[in-house]
Amino acid sequence: MRLILFYLLILLCLPFTNTAQSKLGDVASIYVTTSNLDSSLSFYEKLGFTKKAANEYPVPWVQVSDGSLLVTMRKDNTPYIGLTYYMSDPESLVATLEKDSIVFIQKPKAGDFIQRYLFKTPEGFNIVLSNNPGGFVQPAGPTLLTMKPADYTDPEKYPNKLCGAFGEFAYPVSNLAASLRFWKKLGFTVKSEMKSPYPHAILSDGLMIIGLHQATHFNYPAITYFGIKTADRISQLKKNGLQSFTEMGGKTNVILQTWEGQHFFIFSLGM
Image 1 (cartoon, rainbow, N blue to C red):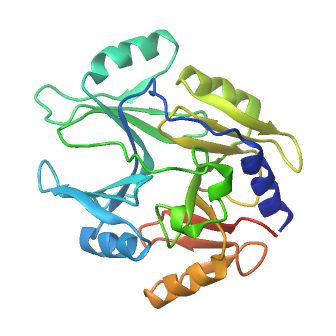
Image 2 (cartoon, rainbow, N blue to C red; image 1 turned 90 degrees about the vertical axis):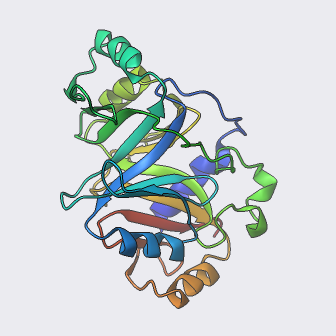
């Protein structure tokens, strides 16, 4: 419970921030693979997401959003979780980042319809820069960083009425200082940094919010939501057919794992 309240204190102290242009692209999406696209789509719909786009080319994929967060799912039997940024000209950006010692471990082949450039953070987290094949749009809804503090306690102001307000894409790191240096190269700004009860920082590039946690209580990336009346929201999620909840510091602070391996933290705002 102490850790949950710590997250809350950090987020409540952050200033109201307008969305800005990201160095990495025009659209930011959490990207996952799934062996069963229909089942994954159904799961996210039960979490308050709606289908925004889909296609069968070059492989089956679907995009969902809850108004503030975009998630792209590709049919693929190889497990994968990461961030993808979409833009009109990734090649120019790649050249710029390479001059700043960013090493790309995968680049597109000649003739590829989707131009994907993959690199990893020091901890091995996947980030892809890709051309926008058309129609991909950044959600305009508020996050916990951009909401007015007065709206934190009004669930009707949450774009996602079931999960709450998107707070961060949390990721564990072994050395916060080194990770911060890396993410700053990518155009992220530190919004808050704390040393107690463990080193932790919240960063944003205007499109995505990243939480870097030098901690041991989780070892996977997690989409994190905050809100009030969490017990009611969890009850509704269970009524929707979701059952894989694990408590983290109480019944109103839970972990939910999607069947393809993505984790959600659904935390309470307030005591």
